[in-house]
Image 1: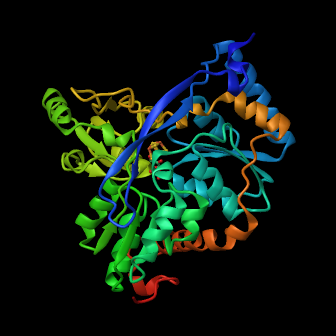
Image 2: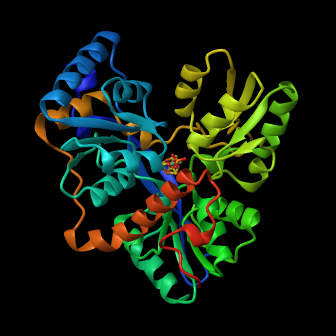
Length: 383
Ligand code: 13P
Ligand code: SF4
C-alpha cells in the first residue's frame, strides 16, 4: 500500500513527556506526564505531487483555504501560500481565518489554532489534518486547575497565551501571542493592573523582566523551546563569531540572554531580513528555517543547539505535534469532511472576548505605528 496514505491509526506513535504543575495554588512544582504524537510517513516525490494536485482541486471545489503555521512541513507551508492561503505566526493565522470569505478553513498547526479559528468564525467549517495534534502548554494547563488558580487571585487580570484550550480562554480577560504579549502586558501595567499569567513560564518571565509588571506565573513550558541550551549556544557562537542569535521567548532565560533579537516566529523573520548580518543562529522550531531560507537565500541559518549531556528524544527542535500535519490528511479531510473542530456553542462568547481584545489591540497598534498607549485601546480600562 501507498505508505503516505496509511490511515492515521496505523501510523507509528512517538512518546512525548511534558510537565503538569502539581499545585495550582502555588504552581512551583511539576510532575512529568506522558503524551504521544503520530509520525506520518514522508511521501515520495510522485505521491507528493499527486497529493498537492488533488488538494488544489479540492480547495477550489469546497470553497476552502489553507491556514498554516511556520512550524509545519514545508509542503503545507508552500501549498497554503500558493493557493491563496497563508503561512504565518499564530496571531496572523487567527486574523486571516476570521477575515477570509472562504466557507472552510483547513488549519495546519496544533489544536489550539483550529479552536481559535472556530471561536472567531463559528459559521465556518474548520478542518485540521490531525485533531490530536496538541501542545505541551495546552496539556500543562487543564481548565479546572487553572480556574481554581484564578479564583484564588481575583485581584489579578488574567492574561493567557494563545496556546491554551477554549475553556482556559473563556476564563481569561486577555489573550496574547508572543507577537503582542509585551505590548499588551506593558499597556495593562501602565493602567495599574496586576497580572495572572499562563501557561508559559519562560515567556511570562521574559515579559515580567521587560515590562516590570507584577505577574504571577503558571508553570508551563514548551517542550521544544525548553530544550535549547545556553552552554552549547555559547560554544556555537564562538564557532560562528559573525552570526547573530535569534531566539523565541518560549526559550529558557539563559538562552534569551544570549540573543541579538527576541520575538515571535514573525519577529524572527523580520529581524533576519532587517539585521545587516548574513549568518544567524536560530533558537526556535526548525520548521521556521524553511521560510527563512526561502525568503533570504543569500543568508545562512544555523539551528541553535538542543543537544548536550541532558539531551532527550524531545531535543530535536521540532514540535512532535506540528509534525503530525501531513499532506495526505489535508486531502483526506477535504474529501470526507472528517476532523472538524467543534467548540461548544455555550463557550464561544466567553472564549471569544479575550481573542477579540487581542485582535483589536494589535490592529490599533498597527494603525498607530506601534505607539498605542493604554488610553488608545478600546478594551483596556484602569485596574
Ligand atoms: P507564534 O505565536 O510565534 O507563532 O508561536 C506559536 C507556537 O506554538 C510557538 O511554539
Ligand atoms: Fe506547543 Fe511548543 Fe509545539 Fe508550539 S512548539 S505547539 S508551544 S509544544
